[in-house]
Amino acid sequence: MPRNDRPGLGLRERKRIKTLVTIQAEALRLFRLNGYETTTIVEIAAAAEVSESTFFRYFPTKEDVVLLDDLDPIFIEALRDQPRDLTTIEAIRRAMSALFAELSDTERARQHERIALILTVPELRARMFDRLFQGTALIAGLVAEREQTSPDALAARALAGAIIGAGVAAILNLESDPDADLAEAMDRTLLHLQRGFGA
Amino acid sequence: MPRNDRPGLGLRERKRIKTLVTIQAEALRLFRLNGYETTTIVEIAAAAEVSESTFFRYFPTKEDVVLLDDLDPIFIEALRDQPRDLTTIEAIRRAMSALFAELSDTERARQHERIALILTVPELRARMFDRLFQGTALIAGLVAEREQTSPDALAARALAGAIIGAGVAAILNLESDPDADLAEAMDRTLLHLQRGFGA
DNA sequence: CATCATATGATAGTTACTATCAGATGGATG
DNA sequence: CATCCATCTGATAGTAACTATCATATGATG
Image 1 (spheres, rainbow over the protein chains, first blue to last red):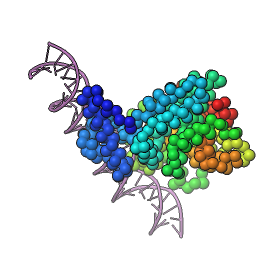
Image 2: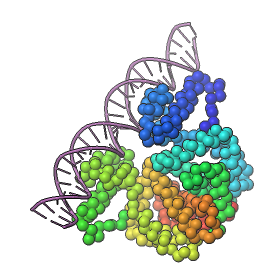
Image 3: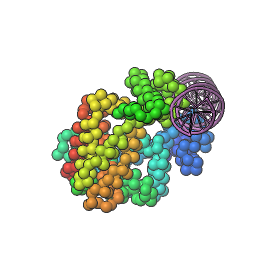
Image 4: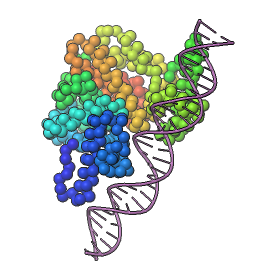
């Protein structure tokens, strides 16, 4: 995740970010080493040299250690930057491309591993889906704003759902094809949706 | 859920179904009465007059008491019954209609309440999404089988994902419009997808 | 009726998570 | 530099979901 430790933040804030990053890094290291379920929070706290209490102050649940990322706001910003006259799908495709382009190689690798982990743990997978569909309302809003053709609320929701569903399909594709390029796959699924499925 | 207690099953089997139904019924009653999170499994077990151990023999997790239903196989069967020459979306729309048509009024009301509960509990909502997307592979298989146009695996997955996403949109629509007719809403979102979104 | 497979209850233990409180530490002010 | 306040931390105790195990009970079968 993009580093936030630019100075000028005050010692307290910097310390806070440091422990957050440490906990997350240690947790992911242990998950990679011993698996998600078998790694306990006591172990993570010990590795990060904090108490169990502190762990829960930074991450409300064990799942959040894996699921929290600061990509969401970046994506939303990238989406807002897209020209108004684009189709919703077009806008999302471009925002996606911009997001992926912004990532460094190590960052991309880290995200790749993160997603691989999420897909293998049912608990995490379920929560990821939930988070993705939390965005339905946001996207539906965009749809209603952009596509002048359909003022129908349900139509906007339908498109938003289909977009997220297509994105999820690209992610799930990694299960059977772990080395696939997620950015490209997602762009392709969205493109399919954009063109229609030739019903 | 459609009753399975037709006789000719042996006493053991009948007892088993009876306790399963009892546990589920008592659980849902307590959830409705006191809320999902605040109701403990000890309470459910007591209400159903079984031990805690027995509860977990019937339902591996607390969530499963709400999420387990026997609609999935019925839907899959209904889907297989659709003529081969239909579009995938058409086939799914018809299978959905058939499924909803098969439900009695009380059954429909029960499902309605069940979904309302699921939507309010993050844990349940997340796992519902997971279950729905478990079906992606199945639907993608259907797509690959029916739509001769696209032998591309990713294209099939994209359509399957979009279909499920559109269905989810209809479900999520209940959050803002609790009295909406789910069957109709789902048919409409799928119809939107079928017609394309006029990109 | 006797035997076997399976279902049940009871007990003990693990782990994620909550609540609470006392002590430590950074930040601002005189 | 000293003081005071806000916040952060660690420790402890407790709850609830779930697992493992074993003895007992009950339906199925010859």
